Length: 423
Ligand code: ATP
Image (cartoon, rainbow, N blue to C red; front, side):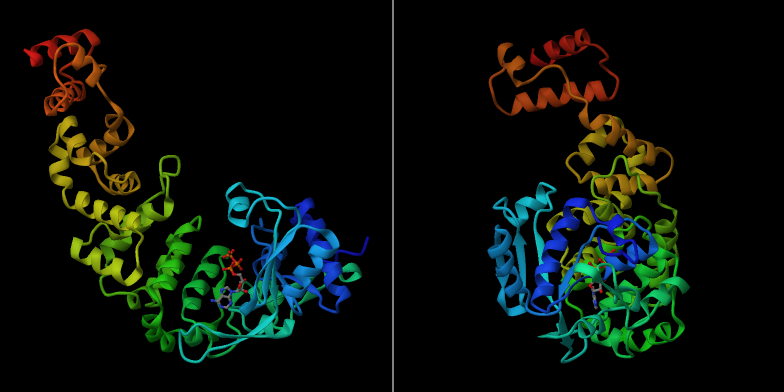
């Protein structure tokens, strides 16, 4: 067994490790070393849990993909323009199926490449390149390291840009002066990594930010929203938003995106109701945007291409937030009538930002009232002689409202009310 200089094997599940070794050993035979790169190396050196195993081949990954099938079987899919391939070692599910089943028996093979940018915020022009080129195209030194995987080289660190020392010092540093202009998404990424690891933006990197701000405007809706979504997927997104505000980055995204003190205080004060919330990203967007007018939400949705679901969540949060005073006065049945069908992550967001009666009404709706139903169904009413039609719905709603408002507290009581309503 070759030496594992950095002890990386303990970060790789055994089944994945043996696949990676098969790939790397065959690849090295062609004179094309294979490396794990980017987040894997960063997090392994930090001793943090790892989700990503990004593999880069110094050579043509599509050729390697075909050779893997010849030697070890399985099948390969190839994306010729970018010289990437995916190897499925056994003839098992398609990639998306495998992912949805949580299986990991495929390996993405990426050819090392160099990238150049025609103009600020453009998508890069890509060419095959060396490992050094591939590391140079990356965002920060801490993300620009690689470990080699073949034979006796297993675990060798390639760190031509000083990533390891920046990791030790806790610094996020770009690789060149034009980095943020080439790709302004890196402004968001820099802040995200710094806050995630409690690192600093290295001082000359931070000094590049003011001049790059104007290029945020050039980013496509998808790229911008993706970066903001990534922030909302983090365990603690609040310090990231704070820093984006302080540096003036958020303010470049869209004038309607709120950065006033009241909004900032609300965002700071909210604790994610993890057990109840289904989609934390929508919950956090809702907390941020609930103070906006519908018109502003629509403008933001256009700039950031919100999904239909996110637009619904943000709109519901804003309309309910604007009505908190009247929601505080509603009886339970009134709450159900008003809130029925609205996205629950948005309602949770408003409830944790509300106070007094409004908060308790929202919470009661989410925890209890929304699922309170009478015993009777349409069938019961039909058996009692009520023909199918709108009256059925009206009577069932009256019964439900009576339960909600405490006018009925037993099956017997419900029956009596039902008979009265049918008369
Ligand atoms: P995490 O997923 O934990 O945030 P990661 O490093 O895995 O971190 P990815 O977004 O999956 O992040 O990107 C993988 C690697 O690709 C990064 O480590 C970095 O080297 C490179 N990379 C990603 N985005 C950019 C970018 N905008 N500019 C340059 N390099 C990038």
